[in-house]
Length: 459
Image 1 (tube, helix red, strand yellow):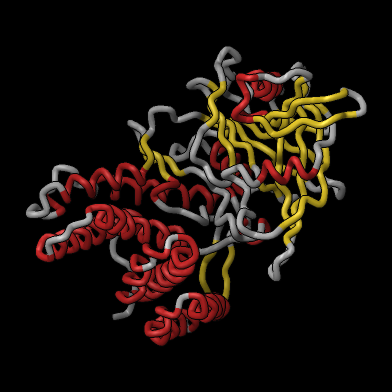
Image 2 (cartoon, one colour; image 1 turned 45 degrees about the vertical axis):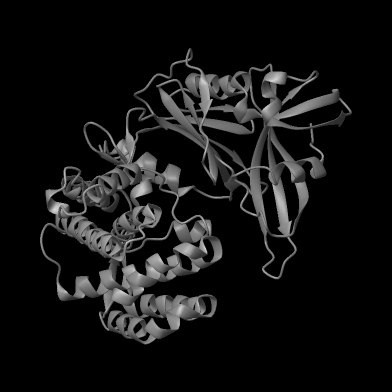
């Protein structure tokens, strides 16, 4: 059941999760991975190879599970991919399977029937961890708004994430979740299982993971924005007196990150790296960024000097980390903060995302997120009076600094050494430089947020 490449190409352009939108490309291969067991409906997982024809070039693999029907299913009109004539089945109508509850039930039953360890429906392998029985009566609901993967909730019981862009090898989201789940870490959503196949070279292709669904949890970014809005509702009140003060949550979030980092040190190998190499990498990224964001040039000398101080620190302890941590990667339940999405930065190659790194990278990501929240709300106010605007800007700075300090103190368990301050400043600078490039390319009106941060570093 091989889809027509042109139909698939047209479909990719309509999705949120396809990372190649805006770049010239061609679908060069559509490979059938496997048919899911226990149909109907007929559900087939495909791997679509995309080759880019711009100067950057390169290829990517995308997972496209389709459900096929002989006759149109109008309940799935919104998920229609296309139709074509198949030698075995005649004319078929294809739909994105993740929108199809009947199709999703096949995944659910396959995971539920998997024994402790693994069960196979060649070439698919459904792995399970012990300790949780899936609710087979639960209906599936596809989440909207995601941009790189697709997540489906099964009632209030479980959440399955289907990785859209796949790379042969171990996916760090599964790898880290499995280790933390087995160690009974309370600051993540427990992993229930995962699905994988093998590529032509025998490397695992990890296609999906199923985990605890934190239905009543609140997104950390949304909580932070609500706190900022509460402060701005009466800007005469200082941040520490605001009814929506976030400092207690920032403190608990710092403790949660420290616990996760400690567990990761226990579960994965640790090591050290040469800070001179780290500084060289940061400097190289800065030089490249200055070409894309000319406004960085006036701050470049200070940043180079900061990175040079990092080079003189000698060696740096490294371990497995989150790799792409910000408030949007956290959930607040009634009991604890939970960290989610351990894939790392999606733009990095898989092998690089699995490398040990400094925990200060995660800390820096959170500090930058605390800086973003009040600035994002500030920009939405449209304050016209200069006095009011200045007061709001002052409160934005108060909110950001108050919560960064509470988070950092809780994480570090006290003050930082001079070397730790230098490292953290460098990681914050490196992140802000990256944000400057990202905002210039995607949200030019927001580039002032990271540029203001860059201006403050070392000033």
